[in-house]
Length: 237
Image (tube, rainbow, N blue to C red; front, side, top):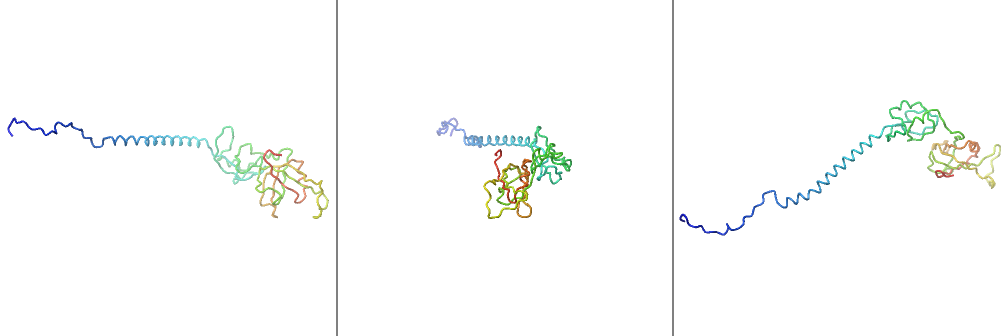
């Protein structure tokens, strides 16, 4: 071909040039980024929730202290031993004066003012000279057999005590003789202080009661086997 000759067009030069996409870019890349956004937001929310939960737990635990509690039943006037005490975690309340667990040695040897049940948190007011039973009340223990008391009876329960008196010096009625209609068992109200399942060694359970002083004599005069306990609802008569 000579110089100056016109080069024929192939037709390719007239076509618009399309930019080739760079590697790593394109619509699929943007779509993947949009799909990841909800997961990123959820992850951030979980982190915030975990931080708040940890902060709340730290504050809650910071408000709890180790204090002394009763490990087993203690009667009024009984001196505390180390076995009667155990440390527990309790919420700190400025209105309640609990005894710190590190003062256990100062409690050992002191006496309980009133009967204490296992789990009771100790306060200084519960230590000192016995002030039990209250004025006008007495404590009494009675041996009863199955059928004479409700199963599952525990300390703190309120009971109605029915007793049949056996007049002093009177001979027991024959087994074939029916009791007169007028011999209605006396009814007394009492609170259970303790239930000794070991009993008297003869198959009876020994139950200690708190009752009115006037009823103490009637309970003591009850005929053998003439005591029946019925549990009453709290506040019931």
